[in-house]
Image (cartoon, rainbow, N blue to C red; front, side, top):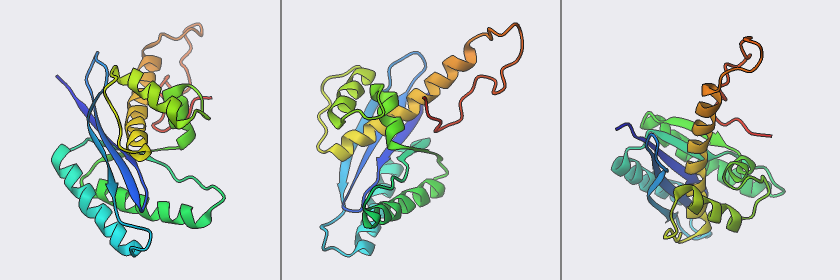
Length: 192
């Protein structure tokens, strides 16, 4: 039985959510484990927190051996300092993915919401409830929003693969002419 294991990461420098989700052919995805890495307090030097992220993430990757890293892409809001810090955490995570030779997919926050909840402006509660439905479970009680977001990010990656496969398996309905893209969606593409 083929299995695809995805590590979803919601990066941060105070806390980073992580989730390991497995996909099997013809079955619902399954959350294997997830948690939130607490990296220190705001007065802890950033270098120390990033080093802690590196240590903790190495343990998670070594234990679960994921095939793919799905990470929330950079979001530039009104707070430049916050965006910079998240970028630093993302750098640590991306470095770890390269070290463990993992495929990387960077997914915008609005795409995660759209794929999981059907709305790019869905609330965290709506995304959480739809995540439970996609996983076919009701017992998942995340310890933090960061953990819940990481599960949604991993699941989002798997949903993009399912959509791409379904799209590529459809027969063309254009009088036998080949579609320009072959029906496959690039990883991380968004649905409008």
